[in-house]
Image 1: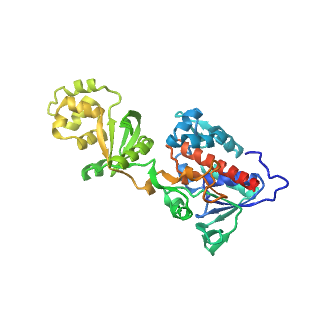
Image 2: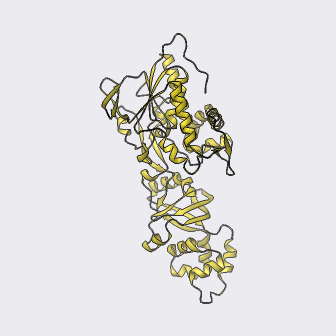
Image 3: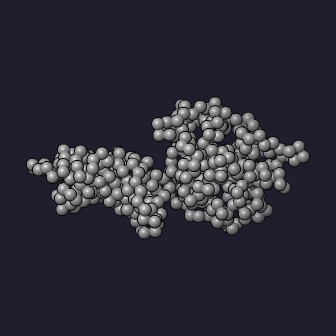
Length: 418
């Protein structure tokens, strides 16, 4: 951690941190390391619940790609988030994990994981260290805004609690996975004080298409891998990306779809739907498929013909049948074209509660560079509650840590300036 220490002439302040996810914990550690008293308030019975769930299949802590490429993942917020990451980025995050006795390694995809792939040991060690450093944890404390005297108001098992703080860091999360604590109920509390908040929207999410009942019952949960996605951005420029996805009862999801969720969601918001085209046979050219499909069917069914002549079976063959008509299936040239560019009409993203993360939140324009709110001096915000988004792959977590680090230092500078 940084070597910032409380000046001898300055009395320790009392700082409240609301939310015990990675951003809040990092802010608390940064502030406490400087010698201030830190009280950390969490609505649930323990901190880091979403962090733990995210690590169930192997905690993807960050990514090893060059920093400029890393920063570009944050799209229109790349400049602002890039500033945070240049202070506390992927390498600093790995060093921080090492300080807790957790070594990391780079996987074949460039993603960075703890050596044991687990989130729980890292989180337990971190909270234990924070407690030893003097951070005071208060669980089952749900923030309700401020009272008329400007004190923080919490709902607790013992009743209402009012807290005076010299500075506050809000790290309340977004609106995804509300059962874990980030329920997205806080925007109105800030908007009532003139803070601009962009609506919370699903990010890294699946999309509804509207399958037939027969298709949904038989093929929900079936993977499609690998496939190549084709789509156009808001300027009409074509893009492609190869990856894996999964058919669901209502549409489609999976890592490939999550990576495209922001432009697809924005297209739906703009046009009422999004068009996504899938190449179901990345290993074959359209010309080869055309030639293969011209061979006599010899009485074989459509599915058998696809399996034998185009190498497509199971869910891929069923998806082609679902999305084409009889005339298209009987014409080899048309069928070959559709195998390479099967159009899917996405109706809407899945609900925010099901999404991996949120878009929207406190507008960065509502804060200064230290993440202090213009409308509420001494109040800082960090983590997923801010108006930025990123794909999965370690990018979400890294920016949450980095924003907590930035807000923590913002508090230190604010207190010193007073």
